[in-house]
Amino acid sequence: MTTLTKTLELKLVEPNAHKRRKLRETREAYQQALHDAFDAGCTTQTEANDVVVNYKLSGYAKNALKKYVPQLTTTYNAGELHDAHPVRFTNEGLRLDHKPENAIEWYVKIPHHEDYHLWMPAQPNPEQRDWLEALNAGDATMGESRLFERDGTWYLHVTATRDAEGGSEVSDEERTPIGVDIGEASLVTVCHRDDHGCPTAPELWADEGKTVRRLRKTYFTATRRLQTRGSERIAESFGDDLWNQIDDVFHRVTREVVDYAESVKNPVLVLEDLTYIRESMDYGEYMNRRLHGWGFAKLHAQIRYKAVEKGIPVKTVNPRNTSKECHACGEVGYRPQQATFKCTNDACWMGEYQADVNGAVNIADRYLSGESRFREHENDDDSAEDGGRLTAPQDSQADATKQETLGTYAS
Ligand SMILES: [Zn+2]
Image 1 (tube, helix red, strand yellow):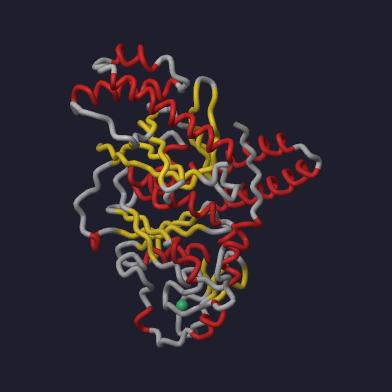
Image 2: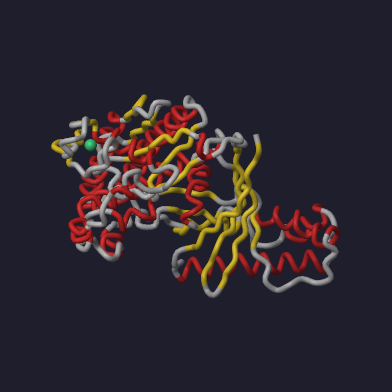
């Protein structure tokens, strides 16, 4: 078992004037305490404590200073202080909250001074989403954090650590790709091919799909009703409770997906590349997945960090047509019902197949090339699809703004 450490960057999203003032107050108090303790030549925590104790700062900032100043004066032997020191907080100084129903999904609690803190919306680096999911679930540990302003924007750098299992020395070709399909009817579907190339051991989380759909529907109808009655507070806590229930389902399912992978020899989990999803889908499919985009990203992030904990590699592939192609012949078919895929190739043996399993096998099959197994056999006539794709929205702004911001954090 090894430990991974990373610095996560969060951008604070447009703090209002009040919150900006509070952030500047924290920074000014911190800088003064730092300079005073430094100028007093404090070389121990106790000496530093005597200086910083009088400042209007949170215990997290004071404790960080008690550790930091003796380092500056002894270890680094710093002659003078530079102007711009970030405000440091000791571990657990920050708190993170996830509100997937909001346009800005992540919130961070920043200590101001004793008993006073600020909840602020924050935009993480999207590539660090697995780390945030791990922190939020308590599967990663938060270390020291630093608050600073750059070109008028406030940022937080948060150190985080989590466990990882060293991967085995197996070449890419020797691995067994497990396709992971995230969908509507079945929340997640996994499948892989056996030694003979036959799809085997499909597993579907269909009941969980139903549960999540029900919870989400309850959320939208009930919170809207509560809001029109003016019960914002009740709507919010009721909403939080429902999203927590959805998150519990997600955590259980993603744990089971990783368990499935562990039961396969030399596994690699194959997911659809979310960054492709916009370009590669027709309008209906795009809008459908756009609505559930948060669920996609959340499930992916949870699978990623749980796979790393077990030393299982994860790879992403182009999702284009994974739900429309026949896994046996590559022909584009259709769905007579939500759960059924029908191949339209007369020469193909397959006929009908479980649609989500077909998708999962297609995803697995793209493991080595990143593309469809059949792509090279196709002529380049994609025109029908390209026509369909032209109607896809060019910008996600329109529907992003429609999402209501329900979170109202008081500070
Ligand atoms: Zn076929």
